[in-house]
Image 1 (tube, helix red, strand yellow):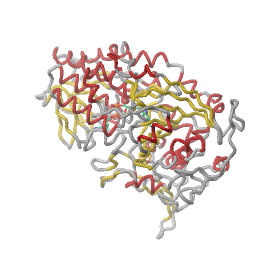
Image 2: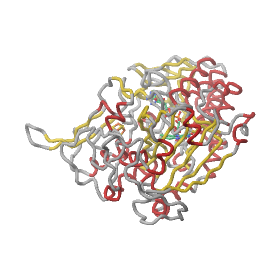
Image 3: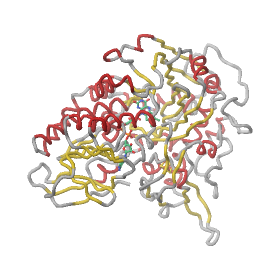
Image 4: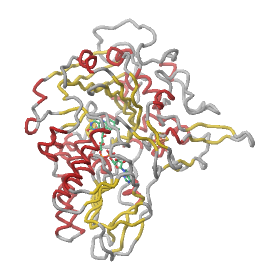
Length: 552
Ligand SMILES: Cc1cc2nc3c(=O)[nH]c(=O)nc-3n(C[C@H](O)[C@H](O)[C@H](O)COP(=O)(O)OP(=O)(O)OC[C@H]3O[C@@H](n4cnc5c(N)ncnc54)[C@H](O)[C@@H]3O)c2cc1C
Ligand code: SF4
């Protein structure tokens, strides 16, 4: 839930020059730049280790990283250099691909770096935070920032400024705060600095990392050692729900996932879990993923609002970077957020360092213009029209199997349908005719459906198998469903978007009344349920423990 700000007196000695909240790519880069400019920086991260709460599809466009760390990019934990970009259009039983292989991509980036490489966040984020530490930043992991500390200051525009943060019940004062707390960004919203994003501005990403021998990765994707492929999957991949899917190669694993816009998902009558199971067992993908072992299942929100979501990103004493500022670019085939996060961290680092040197908290307002002039913002502006295009019903219908009965393109090699997909379809798993699933709408809620018990037609490994691959530490309570009406559209929406089937409608043995139950232990902490809730659900990050991604 958005965190109410804490009002504190204006006068007080700063504990540090700058507090950076969040050690993802945006925060770690801002801390790196600020520490490099000689400032005293605290980099606060709620996960016990940077990256342990983070997940992305995994293609990092390297230009921003090279600008941030220079030659040290050579030591970055990159999985595979992307030299093959493939766009695949899927129907239920056939596929056609546009395959662009280009060896020059291995060295065509800034300073001879590759254009792009795949990454896993559990490895990239600690490394980037380590760069910030090496520059002098003080990393404080395992600490949840609870709210922003504000003070009345008639000398600044608006009469209030951010003077620090509250963590562990203590105020930590700073000359400036950089908010890099990711797509949910409860701190800025709680302080009234940023609006609450609407479901059409956010998508839920559901991803599995699938272990596969490196030799098999190379043989199946047609790449030499060290190089890899990025497949963008459209059409039947998302069962007609607006969004997309991806399949990327890592060193000894694959990243396979779907990105589903929350408004479209709740309107579709499908569930996130169902769409993910569909792509995981899709016949058109089995030649890549067969016999791969699920190493981790996870979920995270994606900012989808494009440039229209960015808005105001600077206030006296505080700037917002990365996903927290809505800086994600979805062109339909390419999803970029990590490099935009790094770029915004660099820009913010320079502006904030200047403001601290000038002892002028209002000077951080210059970040708004500096960000607008950055390559990250220019790319967002170039793709400004994509958000509307991706939302247009005709676009969705054109590629969506749920609504269009005929393939929208000619399929040159139509394969005969061959029963249940091998590989990732668990033994005995139901592989039902998906159009029947399409008609199964949420209003028919089953009373007493428990987490881990799924609709018969959900394909692929059972949820307890998927969640069993993910690490969870005992979490402090963080979900309250007591105000939810079990028969409301809100409950239907919350159940549909949750990729971990945390919510279920149960009946009390004593009173016989229905209620909404939540199995907190399997929560992947994506926050999708809160976005589609109309106010009955109370959900916040656990103060400690919870999911711990080992791949990301
Ligand atoms: C399924 C999926 C696929 C994606 N694919 C790609 C891709 O291929 N390429 C690409 O470039 N981008 C991709 N993205 C987007 C990319 O992951 C994000 O844009 C990027 O991670 C944003 O970085 P960030 O530092 O702004 O936020 P995050 O990486 O989310 O980091 C925020 C950090 O803040 C911490 N935090 C949050 N609140 C608090 C608090 N109150 N106190 C302390 N710490 C806090 C979090 O634990 C986290 O470490 C994808 C995203 C998803 C979900
Ligand atoms: S309960 Fe909410 S935050 Fe947790 S996995 Fe489900 S949708 Fe995501």
